[in-house]
Image (cartoon, rainbow over all chains, first blue to last red; front, side, top):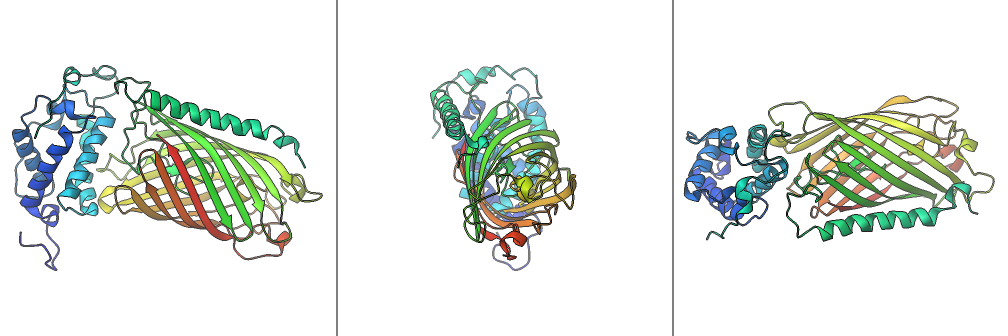
Length: 148
Length: 312
């Protein structure tokens, strides 16, 4: 990390946040927080958390202007069967804020990052009246053992 | 002196308490049930994005309503809250309490009771009671998610205000004796609110079509202007953290009465969401001079604004 404390302003949000080490830390904290969050941990019941963390890092790095390519599925495909609602989307956003804070990203930069992620709600949250609107998706009935 | 409009006041107060207690009870009883049950509030909004309670009981900040629907319910759920607001000015004091419900992130309904009293000047002892019924409907947009668009969330609202009369001033029982045309009236407003997240800013612009004198506390319409006119209001807030915002507001008010050199009001506020259940707004507020030709006090009525909101 070369830019921390330097008077010149970083070229990208990725750099301003502290680059790869800070984002990796944020993603690690985020993974810990979401699996402990009863509002949303059902969506990670069958997830490979190692792969999830790598893909999330790629995505956050890419969207913040860092030197990464996102190799995962598009948001619509990835969430199609989960039946995510707005409350769950917001819970995820709240957990991301907390994780970024724990990684040392200042609040105004957290907002800049979330501003780039927020429009994804349209692809992640089920459209009104879609399957899953009033019934929980299949994984919701399973309990998630705590992950270390 | 017991005014006709105040005769069942203790009953109304009891009704409010029962209503709030029932809401809290439902919430507590349902806490252990599965959250997919649509009867259970989802409390799904992010802190700060549910707004606060404005001086008229609508979801907003201090003086100005926002296009945001009150409460923590998302479009799949509902939310509700009760508020108590105290505005302490140099010569006057306003106490306000009420409840508000937001449903499906689309409709908001509120009831607020105001008690306005003079604590100084020639009017010392004067007390005015007012009830405000509010309804707000979200029209377009989303203040929080549509960060790839400049377009705000918009809502229209109506506030029906009924002044229950003036008491404790000899010879004055009704705002119409001060020149007001009516003791009840309706405000109509259009609000546009947007969180510009990349800038950590919330902006609101509201246009209000009103003939209320001093928010309705001195009646509606007057000898200078009888009918409603369009007035500009605005809130600007800077988001300091996930739970704290600081901001300022301006609310223009019509000058309808020759006995009141009415001016616009403004405030500078700090809003804190302690949790999804408790919010506080503290502000320095200036309502301009109030009834200065009567009180012979032309100074601005400045003071503290403190509002507590509890709910879900």
